[in-house]
Image (tube, rainbow, N blue to C red; front, side):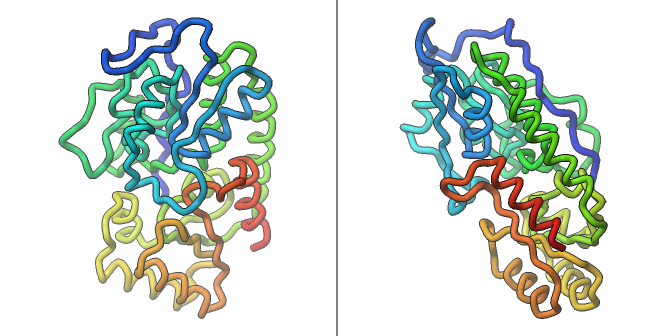
Length: 294
């Protein structure tokens, strides 16, 4: 069962902006608005909102080859982030490699600015959302698949950039949410819980074995028993769709994918980020279309 989604951090106190740390270079009044995004998903969103303004958007990770969970930014990447007017990230530890060295006031984010899940000893004193301590299960970091989160972040970008407008992208996101709600009921299991937010907004039912799901949500390795339970679920046709993440594929997930295909089960590929040259709205539309075909 998918745990309730945490409260979004869609509204930050813009009026309470504090100076950047001494090691960073604060933007000067009158400079062109420089926005740095952790991935192209957030960068695309920022471009939609700031279209027609002087804003310049740079995404650190582009394309669908790099695994953002284990990415290490270059010195040039971090220098660009420190010089930015603000950065846009998902939060929840997923892209902590970008925001851990920045001031809270410089960051637009959807989830709490926690440290990476494998770096518990280096947490920060950032403010947290009301829902962060709601359950023992880790936050699902793949929040750019939550259309409500995208709309909330778009709204904050709009507030920070003169002349920006989130109206058009909010309309597109609302239409996507309607399509999700109209999907046919089906039992789905995931090789990694990348599509949780899409499933929550639809009639799809999450049936991934709990032990396997908990291990992957914590970025751990499923046990032999977890894998056996998943394979049994597939071989007994206990699922209608396998959601497979090719961007973080392992021997374990490839084995699950092969088993699903061998049993005639539909496989829907959902990666971490849009492919090179593919916009985040286009990507979400493509994924939802794949679900509409099941």
